[in-house]
Amino acid sequence: MLYPYPVQYFFCTDYDTGDMSKFMQSKIQASVLISTAVGPVRGETGIAGLKLDFNYGLRLQVPEGDWHVRISDADSGKVFLEQDVSEKVLISVETYYVRWLVDVAKDGVYVFSHTLDVAGQKVYFVYFHKAIGDALALFPYIRAFQRERNAEVSYYVMDSFQELFHRFYPDIPLRSQAEEDTYATYVLAAGVKEQGYAPLDGRTIPMWQMGQFLLGLHTPVTFRDVAKWPLPKRAIKEPYVCVGIQATTVLKGWLYPNGWNEVVAYLRSLGYRVLCIDKDRELHEMDCVSKIPEGAEDFTGERPLEERADLLFHAAFFIGLGSGLSWLANAVGCPVVLISGFSRCWAEFPTPYRVFNKLVCNGCYNDLKSDFLWKGCAFDRNSKRWMECSTTISPVMVIEAIDRLRRDEQR
Image (tube, rainbow, N blue to C red; front, top):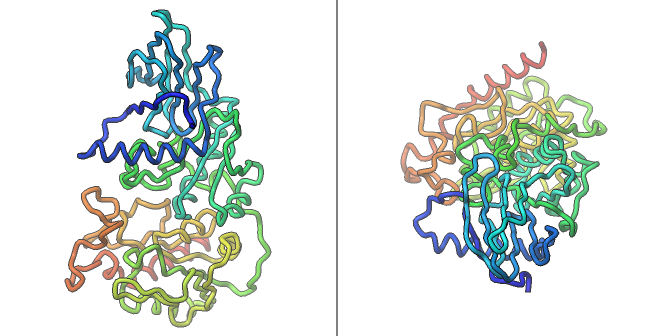
C-alpha cells in the first residue's frame, strides 16, 4: 500500500470542465500511477507522523489527531484548502510549480509552517511523452530552473531521447527514478488539454515559452540560450540543405501541389545538395501521399536523433514543418525555414523565416474552439477550402524566405 491513509485531492485552479467527476477520475488514475513511481511521502517535518514533499504536486501526510491544515499560495496569499484533517494524505491536482505555503496546527496551536523553497534541494524532472518537439521546447528550462532557483537537478526521458539530451546536458544526471530524498518532482508537459499538469493550455502561448509558466521562471529560453551542441565532424564536404516533409500527421504538412519538388529544384540550382531526413521514405494518410521530393537524396530511416543533430549542425539551413525535426534544427543552431498553416505564426520557436498564409483560414491548432489534433480540418475533404492554410502556401513564398535567409547569412 503506497499511503497509510486515504487520499484527498484538492485544487488550486477553477477548472473549466463540464464533467468534474470524469475529470477527477482521470486525474486520480494518473496520480496513482505517478505516485507509485515516486513512492510514499518521505519529507520529514520534525513532527512524528507528519510528512511533506512536493513530488508530482504537494503531498502532505497527516497522522491521527486534532490537526488543522491550511494550504495557500505564498505569493498571493490565496487559500486553496483549510480544514480539520486526521489520518489523510492531501495531494494537489496541480503538479506544476506553485510556491506553496503549508501551515499546520495541532490541538489548536500552529506547530508547523513551510514555504516551498527548492534552493539547495534535489529536484527531479520527468518527460513521459514521445513528441521530440515538445521535449526540445521544455528541456531548456531544466537548466534555467537550476540557475534561477539554485536547485540540484536531475531528469528522466525515454530511452530513444537519452543520448540526445545527454549531449546537451552532460553534467546533469539522467535517472530512471527520483532519489529518496528528492524534494520536488515536476512533469514536463505541453499542457494541451492536460488540466493540472500546466497552469494554462499550451495552445494559447508560443510553445517555446511553456516551460517558463510551468516552472514559475522569469524569462523564457531556448536550447540555444542555455546549451551548445558539441561540434561534430563534418561528414559531407559539399554545401547541403536538409528538408523534412513529414510530421505526426499529414495535416501538419505542406500540401501545395508539387511544392516540395519546385523548392528542391531551386535549391539544387543554387548548388546545394538536398538531403531528406524524415523517418519514413513515404507516408500515406487521409488519401494524401508524402514522399521524398524529386531530386532530394534519401537520408530517411529510423536513425538516432543525435545523428540527425550532427547532420543538421553543418547544414546551410533546414526547411521543415511545425514538427520535431524543425525543433531539433533550431536547438543545434541550424537556421530554419518553417512552413506551417495549422498553427499560428507565433506558435513554435522564434524564426524570421516562418512561412504562412495570413489571408486564408489558418492556425486552428491554437484555436481552443477547434479540435485539430483529433479531427483535422474543419472543411470537408471535397471542399476547395480543405486545408487551405497549407495548400495556399506557394513555392514562391518559400523561395522568398530562402533568399532572405541566404542574404542574412552573407551579411
